[in-house]
Image (tube, rainbow, N blue to C red; front, top):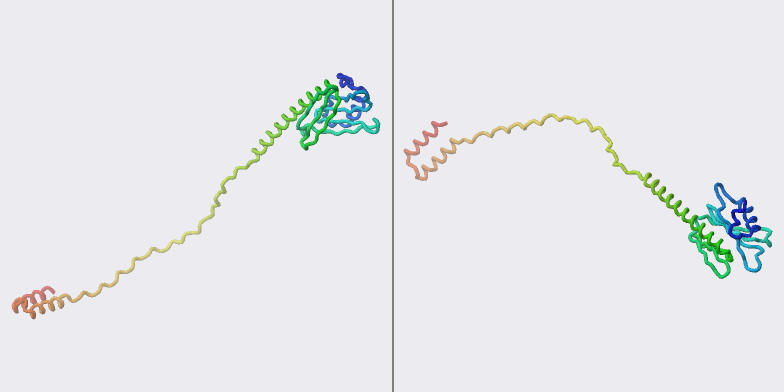
Length: 215
């Protein structure tokens, strides 16, 4: 079972210990991709290890003189960047998380550090694509949930019945004022003319008879 993780000179005992612990930690559909083992110069009794799965990266550290093993894991969506630095003896592989935490292992065989970097970059790209797909789906969901406000329909209310008023009657014409006595006025003016000497007695009499004959 562990043979496929021994292709780059990994320590078989260290890989077996990490693998047995890792199998118990796997979640549904999680698969182990690669295991790298630290190789310290001179003494390498309790090496640190790094395991990569399709869902996370795990750092294993032996404790209690190798009788137990501790681990710290980070899901790929929380990994901001990965780094590798080759030195005279071995290489350093490290990661940086969204929370600002940094984790790494030194004295890794250079070929193993390169493999870790390669697989980590592939997982980051896959996670970036998944994140892009999720964002697109969220945007589609948001655009689909937008409701257009329709103008409120006017509520028809029956109008009150119109009471027909009886047609207004034209006011009755005011009674005609009695005509002034035109004859009297004319006779007065005629007399005034006579008394003023403007007409003769004969003209006065003739005009008076004429007025009286008209009425």
